[in-house]
Every structure is written in structure tokens, then in C-alpha cells.
Image 1 (cartoon, rainbow, N blue to C red):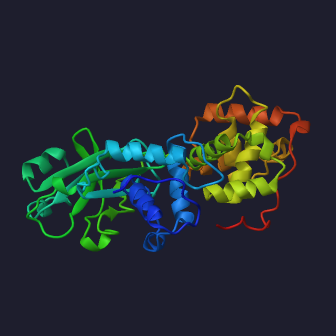
Image 2 (image 1 turned 90 degrees about the horizontal axis):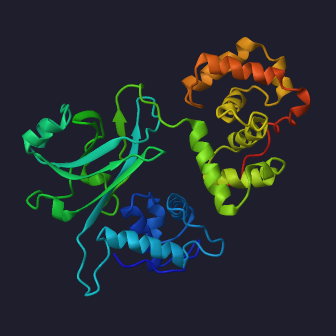
Image 3 (image 1 turned 45 degrees about the vertical axis):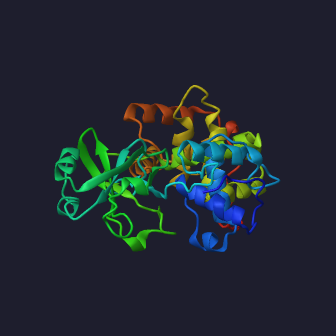
Length: 361
């Protein structure tokens, strides 16, 4: 792979774009196959670039898609992982990248889960579905380790390896399985890949690992949305409260982070109300949870709503992982504070749910 060259413009079609897409894919970012085939930096490539910049705290540049700072950061990572061709022109080892999410049985993303990838041969095929520990895999001698990772906040993971880690006697592409592990125990697994699952012969994307059961809950909808919004606000040097009365800005933000516009507005409105409780770390999420369960977000509306209805709304939001759960004592105390809050601290109601949908890329 060649070094990334800047600048690259949005919607540019070039070999530079193809090289950028290969680099992002090797680092675990998904690019639509149509854009890869056309070597075009369209919206899917732009999203991968923006996600890369956000994860690495690189300021975005409104003038170009990839500026010199982004290219330099990418090249440092690629060099560290030995993914760049060397100065003498010798080809780097062929690289493969597996990427996907770690999920529980409810398809909720799980953060902080250790995953390990293996390449199977015929011996490994005997146990890959049933192995319960890493010791079984080692004893079987039919699975070659390819690498490991820890799932990110949104449950995503990526593992990059080279052809030098594969059995040269095995034909075709690697037969990959990814396990979620805790200590020595296997707690989840992916499907087993075939040649047809690879894109461009080296990218295995969407290779999700499912952890059995629902005891593990991923980040709540609120936590994920708040992080995405805060990241975008930080890039633009805008405070959340500044968006409260601007539907155009809210629409723009929702489109940029690919989230429902009404959820983004609920988050912003709940944030404004939560400032009445500056010492309560749960206020923002609890108010967001009410809004998501169709309780109007104003203190007057909350005071006029039956307590049983409010408590039921919160418990439904907990169960659906819209917000993180709190104990009953915390919940009833917060409810009492909401009811005691003067009605003159309320905000205008949310815009009608019949408002036009946000713009599309």
C-alpha cells in the first residue's frame, strides 16, 4: 500500500482515493463496495474519514475531505503496522482485516470485550463450533491465531493480520472465526468465513461476534448518541444549548451523525432541562428516557403525568437499553425533584413529530 496523499476532495475519483479506501479498510473502517469499485470518495468514504478523525481527535477540515494532518496521521499508523511499501519498492506483506461488532443476544453493542481471531484447517473444523476454552483450541492444533482486539464504545472491533501468519499449504483465502473471550473462557463466537465473504480478497467486514445471553448490556442509546453529538460539537466549537432553537442545525447534525432527528432534538431538549439539576449526574439521561417514551419534555407536563406512568416509562427505557438503569431510590428522588420544580422553568414543547425528515446525503 502506498502512502496517503493529500488533499483529497469529497466526490473525487482517483487512484489516491482507492489507496485511501484500502488504508481505511485495513484499519477496520467499512467502505461501500460501490465506492471502492468506482474509486470515488462519496458519502460512505467520507463517513469513514470522519469516524477516523473523531476517534483520533483530528479536527475536520471543511475545505477538503482529507487534509495533510489527516494524511500524516494515517501514514504514521500504516507505517507502525508495517502496511506501507518500503522505500526500496519492495512489496509489503499482503494484509487482511476483519471487522465487525460484538453483540449480545438482543443485538446490543458491547464495549470492552476481548476478541481473538483464528484461521482454521481441517483439524480445527472439528471443534470450532463447540470449543469452550482457549486451551481446547491450543490442544487441537488446528487453528492459527491471527490477532486480538478489544471492542470499542460502539461495539466495533478490527483485527489486521498478514499472509505470513497463514498456513501456506492451505489453498484460497483464510477460514476465519472470531471468538469473544473472558480469561480463558469462550463467551461468544462469529460465523466461519468462506472465500465469498471477503471484499477485494482481503477485507472481512460485518463479521459480528455474538455473546450468549443478555446479562451483558452494551452502551445505552443515550450514551452512544451523546458521545456522537459531543464529538461533532467539539469539532465545530458549538455548545449544545446553542442548537435548541435551530431546527436547521439539528437537522444538519442528525444527518451528519446518521441518527434520527427527533432523538437528537430530545437529547438537546433534555440537556437544557437537566441544567436545573446541576449536581445530578443522571438528570440528562432520565429526562431523555421520558422523552423517548413519549412523555412531553417540560416540567409542567411531567407534573401533570401520573407517577405510575412516569415510572413505567423509565422502566421501559431501562429494559430497552435506551438509558442506563438506576435504582428505585434514585428514580423516586429524581421524580420528586421534577414535580417540585417550578413550572416557569419549562421549555417550549418539541417540534411536531410530523416535521419533514432530515436531509439525506
